Amino acid sequence: MIPRNRPVINEADIARQAGVPIATWRRRDAPAFRQRVPGLFPGSRILIYDLAQARAYLAGTPIPELPAGEHPDDLLNDEEAAAVLGVTASTVRAYATQGYISAGQTVYSVRVWPRRDIEERRKNPPGQGKGGGRRPGTGTGPRKAHAYEGDPRLHTATAALATAGDTPRHHIAASLAQQYGGSTRTWERLLAQASQTSPPG
Image 1 (cartoon, rainbow, N blue to C red):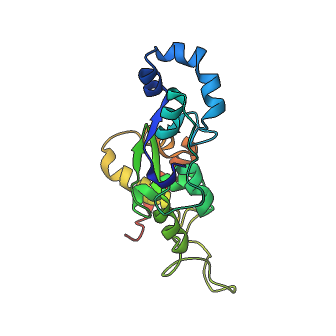
Image 2: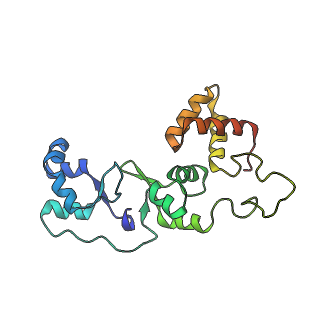
Image 3: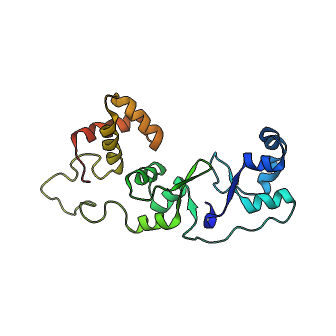
C-alpha cells in the first residue's frame, strides 16, 4: 500500500541517486537498505519504497514513520484491493476493465487504486440489485442460465471477441489469461459462452 498517495521510488532510481550502478547497489547496499526501509508492497516482486524514507536513509538521517491507519487516498495494488473486496486479484483487474471500479493508475509498473474507490465498490458490489444474487426457494427455472452468468469476465470476453477479427479463439484466450489472470482453458470457455450470449450492457 502507498499511504496517502505519497511520492515513491524504486531501486533503480535509488541507485541512481546514490551514484552507483543498480547491479552494484543491489549486491552491496540493498540488503542493509531493505532492513531499514520496508517495501510498500510486501510479497510483490516489484519493490517500491516511500521516497521520504529512502532519501532519509541515503542522507544518513532518521527515517520518518509512515502515516498510520487507513485513508481514502491510500493506493492499493490488486492483491490488497482483492482482500478488501473478498475476490481474487484477477477479478479486481476485470472490474477495472469493465468499469466496476476506476481504471486506477500505474506507479512503477504496479497498477494501483485509491482506497476510496475500492471501499465504494465494497459497499455496492456487482450483482446486487437488478439481476443480482440467487433468489430463495426452488423456483420454476434454472438458478443460472449458464455457468458464467454474472461473471464480469464474460463482458471482457465479449469485448475481446468484438475486436478480435479473424484471430483464433485460443490466441485470444491466451492473451486474456496473460492480461487478467486465470487459465487459458477458462478463458476459452468464457469466449465460447460469450459467443452464444449477449450479456446485459
